[in-house]
Image (cartoon, rainbow, N blue to C red; front, side):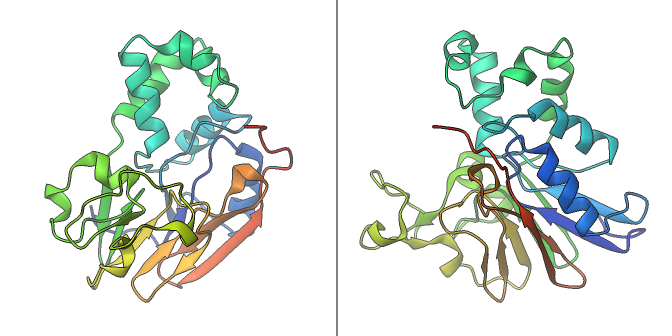
Length: 233
């Protein structure tokens, strides 16, 4: 997919069902659907209060989402017939699953890719494998990795805190030496994080922290305050 016909691309970190912060972010960024591309970086739904609203807004703007681990899990439980048990947990997207149009929204979600790539950039939810080409990387790795070893192995028991990363494991972006800039989400505890060739944009919007976005061409970050009433989970 090329970037022709658009002035710039706006990548947005994990929205997680927070439509109101997303609306404010798009206004603050002066986003215009006729001139810009909008690429949400996965986990657009789940713990927030308006999952259906986020999907409706993204669809109306012609957004090009990628799959995150929360979309992956949602589709797994629906397709596996485990939906009833999942709905009993307060952090799940009840409003979407109880919508009369839910099947149409889930079908749209099934069409989202695990990554997108353009001129000088890659968009992925979790991160990249240190050895495998993007096209050869298992989808589960792309949506779940935060830390790995030099061979792409994931830790078997890690609580997610930077201070407790097991020996031999490092953030995946420390192994990445590519020239393309990678925009990713998935790591709220890490927060907004930049290296010369990566942009980590999950800043914990659903937990009351910021919602973050990055303009590719102008290399500019836009942030707004996140969900004002975070979920109790």
